[in-house]
Length: 409
Image (tube, rainbow, N blue to C red; front, top):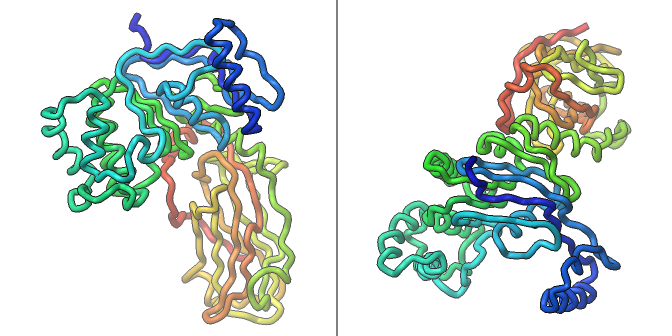
């Protein structure tokens, strides 16, 4: 059996919340190490906490591992341990092969040096000779797209330029395993596409990746297996879609549906207003949970205080990060109708093709010239993946107009 590139067993790392006390503990730990007092650093002292605890995993050659988790879960700490930047307080971490790391934006760059000078300095750290760097520098500059800025001090670079240069240098070193922490979130879409293409090429050549990202769908596209880090503990290694579902379940536990917004605090003339916005259908449970790929109807009860025509309705489905992931509108369908008194407007998604997570609805009503009512977070709901077909939904982020059926009564 092939020996793993990275093997972690019982790995633990602790930190102290108080800075002065952490310095004192640090001196204690150095003294304990000098005196070979085994186990002296494995217990928690006053003010300490485990940032990572009992972490176990193996990364085989050619595999890519994705790590998702909330802020403060310990993701960056785990990568720093794998990169050798910090030492574990408990357990064992064995690393084989050449490791490249993109853990912090522009880490290792001297801000007073130019981009070109930093390329030479970074490549020398990796063990390349001056002649080898001379052959590499042109390709690095071209990949980063910074030819006109390469002789400018990097302290004047933007975050995107830092990311370009850092990624271009790291991938040219051809490591056996590459550690990547969120840096792909920086830069324009064209550069991100170039990064993904290079990652795919390196994977095909046998390079393994450990990728940390807040974007679980990015993990799903780049990694054969993934794990969720929560409060310093790793879940078992899972397929990408299963890890995404578990990540959403953990984040949903901290999200509670919001309360109804009073009419007076909503934008609009309120000559027509939303009285209720709710979810109905066989795919909706009693607690409001929606089963993906089931039939879902969004129902809006409205009240018109006087006869109104030329009215349009819009419903926005927003994700937990406040991005609009779907929008439906009655343009061309409702303007010829006259609304007076109570009515019901409904839109059916059959099937509801939303991936797992928390969502909320914005409801908007306008006439040709005025906004009648705009209700933010009119309803909130959770989507779960239960059917096998739901696991095959596209998981790209974005806004789109859904197809479906409007009904009026």
